[in-house]
Structures are given as C-alpha cells and as structure tokens.
Image (tube, rainbow, N blue to C red; front, side, top):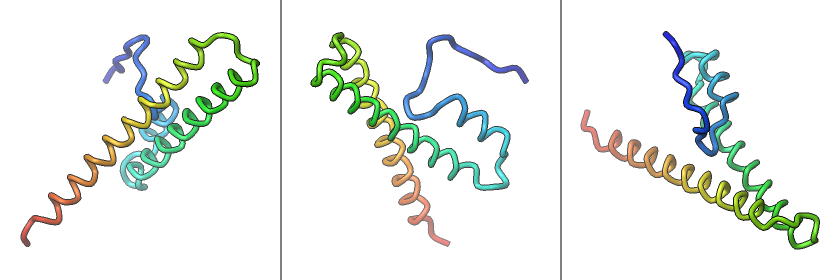
Length: 101
C-alpha cells in the first residue's frame, strides 16, 4: 500500500513523527491513547511557541509581526482541533453509554 503525501498539508497538533510512531506500534498496545497523548503534547508545544513569540515581540527580539500572528493562528487552530476531538470523543462515549445491553 503506497502512502499519499500532500505537500504543504499539516494537521496542527498531530506531527508526522507521532503518526509514524502510531503506525509502527499497531493497535495491540493502546496506540490510540498514545496518539492522543502525543497530539496533546504537540498542541501544548505549539501553544508554548506562540507564547514565546508574543514575549519576544514584546521585548523587541522579534521585529516581524507576521511571525507572531502566524504563531498565534497556529496555536489557535491546534486548540480548536483538540477541542473538536474532545467533543467528538465525548459524543461517542455518550452514544456508547446509551446502548442498551
């Protein structure tokens, strides 16, 4: 099976490394939980980078406002993605709990 790669396409909060690591681990060892943890760690890292960019701009270390705005947008997008994932997981959990046995 060949991989499909789209240049310039990236999903905030999910790095290529975490996807490859998840593919190597398979489904037997809780790779879904590991993928979620990795996505949360990546989102946190992106948030930290945005905070550093804002601090750097406030201190005068970063002269280009575009860099700061892009970092903030990337952080916002990763946060929104993680909120959507959380929402979908909670909805799925509620649906499973409503199933009568």
